[in-house]
Image 1: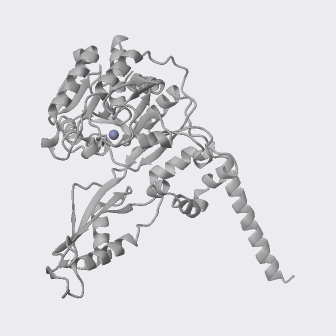
Image 2: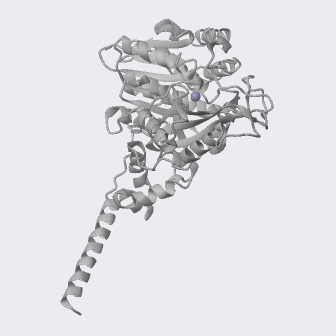
Image 3: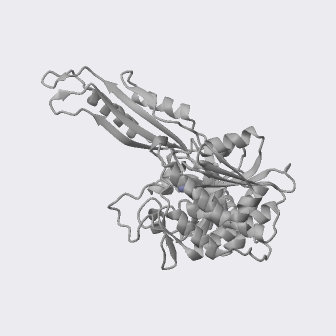
Length: 488
Ligand SMILES: [Zn+2]
């Protein structure tokens, strides 16, 4: 063998060995991030009271609408009265205010109000239950049957609202006094953006100088079923939610008879613009919440996948490709582009004066409203297409801390009540009230303490929404434990 070739193959061999060594070393030292809480007696809760309260609350059709005149304030006020009746101590010991018309803000003063507060969020409003959906029990019946409380809002989000109040009521009965302020904020228009509710509550708190250690809102849930090769259930805690931007693309052209058309009609120009945008999805990348998710899940996975996740410096392109393969995971790695409306013309032989389409983007952390709007303009590259936002847009708030005490507290409370699960951070793909609260805290966590299957997730805005009574009991215990441990 010539000395040069010998040298080269020796060098190559050494590189391969170092590579294999690094990969193995990283996999073997991939340390579990799970916290094992100290043994503790879980707080006692009054499940019977909570179930009765939830059942009554589900009978109230607290529908929200973008047009406030379409909302029935009476039904929200009835809910407020119901809460007063069911949770008397809460209403004696906490300061309650109505904000933004129908939203509720409770302040539970702690012994040391100079400490940062803890803020629990839930929403009072629900989405409609259209007739014709296959409900096997009345959507606003609040029936308790087969181990479930049935009705629109059971999971999203009255279950959580009642569980939070039941946790406070139980702790008050046991004489618990928080060491710092606890706030419970219940918006009334989350399903339509939270602009009259959560936004106003958050602004009020900010105006009063309230600083929160963290807020905890609905968000991700406990998922099961072999996700990424983890053979245990995973409690996913959202570190942030994706941002939101809807843009209207509008074209105009001279109306007239279709027998003498111009080269391009309003519809033709719009179609070209839509194609240009739709055919250029935004590129995939791994943001911090997703990277942290794999840092938490990786050590719980067995070889060889564990080595794969321990070495994202090497395997990231492969992982991104894998994630792009399914709609749900693809949405976690890119700003998604979805055309949701297209309109134009009304008669087959008349040229329309205008045509419009709406594209809805869900923004990854780091992608700004301005940059994505500008990119759309560049792609369309046609001055005849007017591009304007259709409603309030917002970027994804900066991801919350994962290595500080706030996340550790939530993590510990989850493992205390659900010792069988793995905790991992994540990114919430939809929207919630949470993003309004970044004016009072850097840490907006999104976690609904509820085990949900794919089928359960479909019930959330679909038919047969229900909450298991056993699950409800653990939800309440989770909130009570978190209140005890963060503010005890
Ligand atoms: Zn909700």
